[in-house]
Image: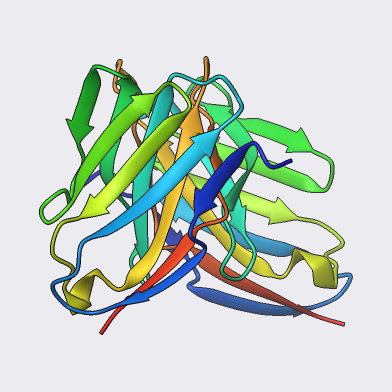
Length: 112
Length: 111
């Protein structure tokens, strides 16, 4: 399966700290995306990194991609209570089917 | 107004009943998707559609059917609901790029 695997499954930190979560996958990718899901709500796209990119920033988010290790990390800096959510990586392998394969997610809890 | 809407938001039904979940979008996207989410299993693709005449099965299509009534509407049906179809269902759309845009979800309980 091309499903991404997030690690850790759950992460609890204090407000102001940085949060890092990781995603590993098995085969080649076109791009890797990160999504956030607040409890019971729809997923929201955060950031996309292409296979020829190594690092990308968006506000307090930093994503890295290491295709040799088939892994990606999402760093949220200076976390806030509002960052409490589940975070999913999604793999796009390319081709015309435009299908994403989602991992099982990391549940991040930011304590005030 | 939300770009991707789903109705109903919550539904409780009984085993054997036929259920339809509806999805509408105002994003003008051609691609639409149905996923289900179970605790600890992430999202799994049920069906996807690239236009009204193009319907494709995802990884868990058994027990489900879909209808793409128009570019903006994509419905998911459970012909005879069973308890293990209790889950959170999401509709999503995709435009010119690879990013997908999700609806708020439908929480379905089959008793």
